[in-house]
Length: 330
Image (cartoon, rainbow, N blue to C red; front, side):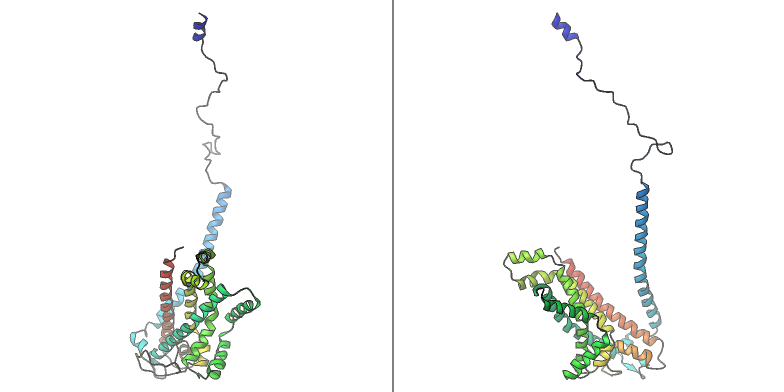
């Protein structure tokens, strides 16, 4: 009997649980509705306004850089349009340089840029490889680095006088394409060295250490790993070298460029290394300041061809750099 009564009594829990509310209470918002816990705060709105202002300022600075370049190119093309043609490129100046084309200055500029490039590029790259990969931090290395930095700030007219003394007079080359090209090469060496050192320094040290751990020598590491992975940065310095060499006037005017020189039209080998030549930069200066009664379109046409030559060489170098950069493994 006692057992049956105990079974009939309901079991009570040791501790009682409070009743759960049917829904969580959310305090009302300012307008009487439910407040959104994810709503933007005044601090967030202020940060967003600051971000928008900074982005607008950066965009404006970018447009201020690009807009003048576009205006200059459009203006030059508009003024030079009446004279631009195939004959303008492949005929020599005539009529006291008041008519004709620019074949002789164009070919001379190509000679000067290519020869200076062939001289400055290997010397600059090899010097940068030594300074970055082999040279220790000694007083001699610091002097060399200081000399490179100072050489980059020397005015072009000083390089011209150095070219006259070192190549025209001392080396016995005379006023020639070779002397002018070597002067341009000396002038552009600091740019190539600095760009190459930056590119070499961007290659991770872990790449070198992995090669050394596998038994590779320092030169094998540089040739197989460091140079292939830094070639895109090296080409950047070479692009800057081409642009500067094509537009310089003072160094070539003192060392190898003449006022006028007639050559065979259409002949790519009309100049020799020890010949004097014409150059687009010098030709543009001459017809703009020294020759009277020049047609208005002639100086602008010369400027457009000079600018187009630089842009074509730069575009080719940029395409090569993009291709090599796409082959990087990191």
